[in-house]
Length: 598
Image 1: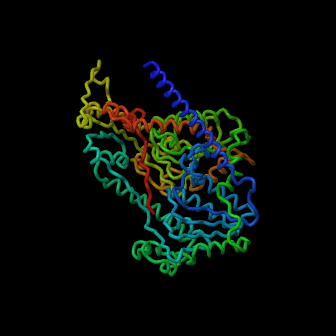
Image 2: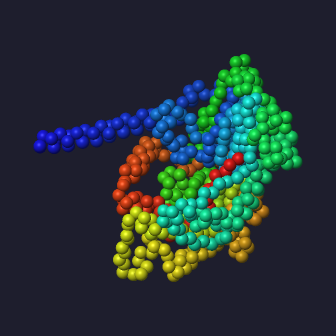
């Protein structure tokens, strides 16, 4: 018996030890693969008569999380080294291609790009600027989506496969409503809000979209779409006078053959891929196709080295604030504590002469937004310029943290505004009954356990929550009023929770100028009276090994949850997710992200 006991202990020890060793080997292999993928291709550099090939596929993001250490375990193990498509990388590559004499042209390989309109517009503007150097842009697609065409429309030549199609449908968004589902499982959401247009709560409290939400969304989409079509019409004269909308809505271009697309001058030619790429090769000085092809990642590396030179003097610090504020999803949002600490460090850094906050956030925690706002006020108090550049979103809490800037730049297709506050408190009493749980509470005071998720709020509690939301909203409005120099009474009319496009925000006085991140940087440098400056981006890179171990640990926790079968432990596991709805103090300054369809 004793021998068997020691054998089991030894077996368990060896198993654990082997698991640790294996994990270590995997970590080392992945880090080596990561480093290799980051620096592969550098030795040869960019050769003469090269073509910058941009593959338009997947979802276009603002920048890579953690600065090029977003490790995809499966991709690395399978030998995949393709990096995420980001505005940061593509714009830097296109700017480098413009001035690099070894780059002859740009080739847009259209395979279904997606993303928010402002991100696509930022890349399109960079492509438009590239054409000033008199180099050509070629675009090709076997089948082309609306997002592809928005970018490809700037090209000198647009070719479509003779058997291909152009799938353009206009602009729209989908919102899922969960109330009926939650009713079935016994979960109720109690909501308080300020702002009729604050529609983020509706999916949890209603089965259908309200008339107010539908009207404001239609207005927003129409404004964005009109901006996109205006850009495409400038590049493609044949699509003037509403012709593009007619092709989409009346002629149903998405169902038409390639010849119809060509006849209507949406594309310039019908060609098979190999023939079109041979044409690009000849243009770039090669007899046998495209011989020297470079990726955006390779071309952008020169700029990336300068972007993270934290010891540089005369800095214009670009601080990225991307994602939901204090989101519970690891690595995908804005941690207000980390961001405020970063800003405080810049306050003390005498090499930083100006700060540009790059905001790409639909908002989130009202408490977290206030902390970030206060840190930015500390920077302003030093007398150095503080400028905001808005990306896809700078709405609700995203606008909260932007409102105090000396000047706000927005993309014409930015979604901003949505000034409002709400709170959502889940009640899972019905769920407890369904799974056989009976919570029994004992407390010294009637409100000792308020709010909790096991019972509905009474009238007094609901009134207290509403009062707290109104206090949060009044503070939000005051911050915006003080920062934008707009009277509170007028701001109440503008606010009301409504999201607006950048062009509308300019008319309302919510932003100062329509422009790019580069434009915001130049303004900040000029305001700081700098003749020469270094753009440095924050936050910087993280340790790849630490990020890997953190990811593996999170996956381990996820697998552990999968094995839970006890109802009480299920409830304990779900509790952190439910806490997300309560937020910090249960107040949220957020708008729902929109999934755009083109």
